[in-house]
Amino acid sequence: MLEIRIHSRGGQGGVTASKLLAQAAFIEGKYGAAFPLYGAERRGAPVTSFTRISDHDIKISSQIYEPDIVVVLDDSIMDLVDVTEGLKEGGLLVVNTENGEKLKDPRYAKFKIARVNVTDIALSLGLVLSGNPILNTPILGALAKLGVVRLDSAEKAIKDMFEDERNVKAAEAAYGKVIV
Image: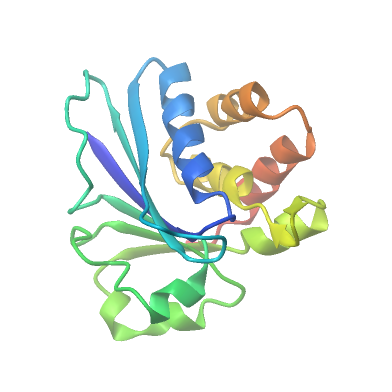
């Protein structure tokens, strides 16, 4: 079973990214389960979402404490939360960041690191809601590039949820811009 934890801020699309990822896995004939963890959060507050992908029925519905992959949609969260807590050694840390300076910190050395600036991709395509870039569809493209799901299944999941073709273009753009 592949376990993924997504750190985002309310309104960025982290919860929807988790759902899209589970849907893309389902399209591939796998099992997927997605759920968020929120309290009394508001737009801009840190939110954690979880996705499990498996070839077999998923019977676990708890938080993910030892993820294989951690996705960070806002690198400022890394100043507030230890996003790698529980991340398995050699696990994948995927960060939406402009330049990757934070990722040079020695505490991240034991992980595989991938970065992509999905914020710029969303802004360039006008994927903005209430002044905030929507990061869910481009991060799904990045995860496809990293082999979590296939790009065609990611695109189908996006099309099933959103009519606006810019969402698919965002996923394709992020697919091409991931730096490992």
